[in-house]
Structures are given as structure tokens and as C-alpha cells.
Length: 199
Ligand SMILES: [Cu+2]
Image (cartoon, rainbow, N blue to C red; front, side):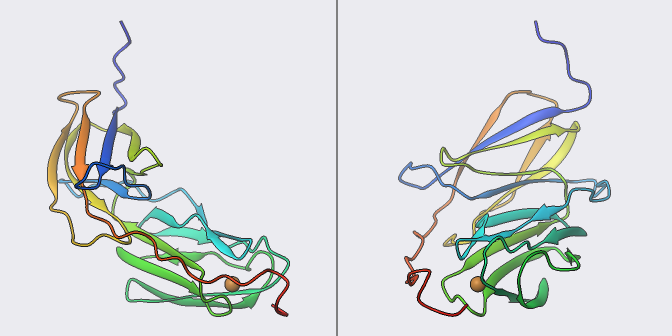
């Protein structure tokens, strides 16, 4: 028998469309009902590579520092007009001098002033316990302390917000939550060949 892990249990959720197909890039978040969360310590990185943001969706804890390294040889100009974080990093190459601190919970949409098709999203949450679904629709969250949580699922292209569910961690270890979320397909956007411009 496996030893009991007293430091916390893993949590797993599968997100599917109403018709059953797995949903990739959904955020699955466990927010403690107590409201008690540790200070953010993880840093995140959103790269620009081949004139795209990588990854498409980032989930960060409120207060996290996010770096925006430009891995391309051309310049990018990253911006957000979202109320949860309005900022811009003007036309730059390489690593910006400072990370961006996401200090407010909410949804942040990122764009690039030079390359219209570039798109990425940041979900800023008041919890360090979150995961992102892969192509199989499954998100895993490791080491969740026992207790009561609100389970939240979110996707940048969701058609409607999903209701919060209450989850108790520790009562039934190894349980997988099954979630349904209706999500629009990603619109294809025109991306010109790489050598067509000076940027
Ligand atoms: Cu760009």
C-alpha cells in the first residue's frame, strides 16, 4: 500500500465540451474557502517565439512576477488593456529589464502591437493551487492541503462562465472531477511569412 501523503493530496479534473471532446487550455483552480493562501513564489514566463506567444494561456497567483522574453530576432511590443492589468512593454528585443507584476485577480488578454495575430491570456487567481488542461482535457494539481475549496474552471474562449463547485480535499483522495465547459474554437488569424517585413 502507498504511504499516506500528509503534506497534501493531488487533485485531478477533466474538462470536456458538452459533446464530450476534451478541452485544452482550460484553467482549473482550487480557491480555499478559508481565503488563506501562501505568498506567491513562482515566477512565470511568457515567451515570444516564431511571432507567437508561448504559452497561449498562463495561470498565475496574484502577486506573481511574469517575464516576457523575446526569443525572436525581430522586435515585439507586448500590451494589455485589461482592467486586471494594463501595461505595455514597448518595442523590444531580448529580455525586458523588469518582469511584470500581476497584482490583481482577473482575466488579462495580451496582444502585440506589431503582430496582430499574436494572442495570449493570463488568468490571475488568488490561489497557488491551479492547473491547466492538456490535449486530453486533464489538469492535475499537486500537493493540495486538506480542506474545503471552491473549484473554478475558466477558458479564454468559454461561451459562458461555469458555476463554482465546492470540493473537499482529503476526504476522497484520487478522485477526478468531471467538468463540462462550452468553448468556441480558436479563430484562425492571418500570419504573413516571416521574411515579409522589417520587424
Ligand atoms: Cu510581436
